[in-house]
Length: 125
Image 1: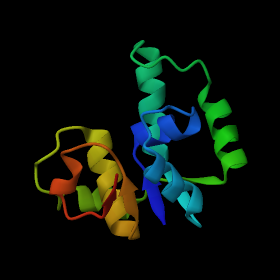
Image 2: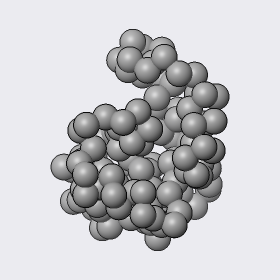
Image 3: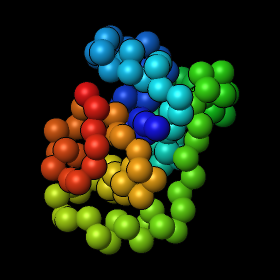
């Protein structure tokens, strides 16, 4: 099971060349691929601030997830509780939540973020 970090999810869904071929192949070969609802929230916020040039609505993006067989991972209490256990390495609240979700769910996180591997979380890139 893999969990896509927000940028990896965007690059995968919109065929961005920044997603390296080995990573793309790994995503496509996985039985279960997830994206956090936190990533969808982050996308909506960045769209509203003009920091992300994706014209698709969140509803459209979710529809694309269904087509791509990507499951939406909800935020659960155990994810939020585990955030308190994380060392204060990364300041981004979305990344901290996604790290917590990956750890508590036993998932491998697909990310290019150089800070995330400093945590005790399995990472692919």
